[in-house]
Amino acid sequence: MQCTVWTTIHAQENRACIVITGLGGLPEYEENFIRWGGAIAEACGKEPGSSVYSLDGRQQKKSTILQTFDQILSSTSLRELWFFLIGHANHDGQNYKFNISGPDLTDTEIKKFISSLGGTRTYIIAATSASGILASDLSKQHRVIVTATKSRFERQPPLFMSFFIEAVASAEADTDKNGKVSLLEAFLFSDQKVASWFEEKGRIQTEHSLLDDNGQARLNGGSEDSKIGASAYGTLLAATAYLSTPPEQSYRSLEARELAAERVLIEREIADLKFRKNHIPEEDYYNHLEEFLVKLATINEKIQELEGQR
Image 1 (cartoon, one colour):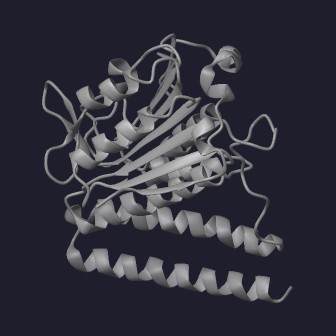
Image 2: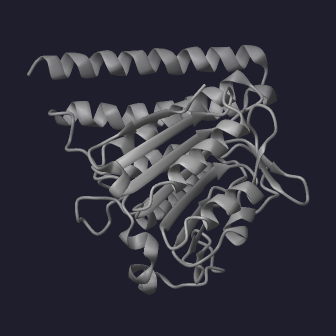
């Protein structure tokens, strides 16, 4: 089975995006990974001059992924690469391993691929457990590495990608108001939202994102340990990297836009519930899931009614 690929005109002259979703151990986990992967692949595809490679690690083995790497490397005029890992990963004390069908994809193989790109600007977003190790392993000039966790010891499935997807098309994330969201803005938005979300839930925060920029600067979210101050943000490579230009407001009425924002919150509650399925009573899980799904259906129906009236 080959990966799903779609392109825009003259894509090979500009940019490639590779989105790999992996195994989750539970169908509920994988539903989150597949939904997030589809959303980020769609965002990548909207930007002119992009080739998007979407791989489902539940079905596609390492050989297919490595073949895709070789296909991307065959482009002699590639200007930038966006590389997404969305799923579950672990570290065995020697290697980071992204869980897919068959042998896992390792940090060694990822590093070999990325290094073969030479001076191509590369943006790596590892939205997995144990991903923090990659910030150090892959750090180099012309690269930005974003990880959902701060170390290999944060092993819980992270919600970071849920907030990152929200940021890509969010006016709130566009802090410099230039009509598009940079990778830096998406990182800062997501990091802050993750922290607020755990605080509001009254739960211990199990994920702390990192950003390593150009092999010279490190942002540990809101931590005082960050190696660069906020006044220097504009000098970062991530500040001029744009995954996509947010689409024009798709809903015409204010009420529909407010409902759409509420829908995002409910979808995140569902994602979190699926990650916690094994830690709560089965009856509670299905009761909460039904409650959220009913709310979601009601919101979708109201949006359709509002937009249909115009």
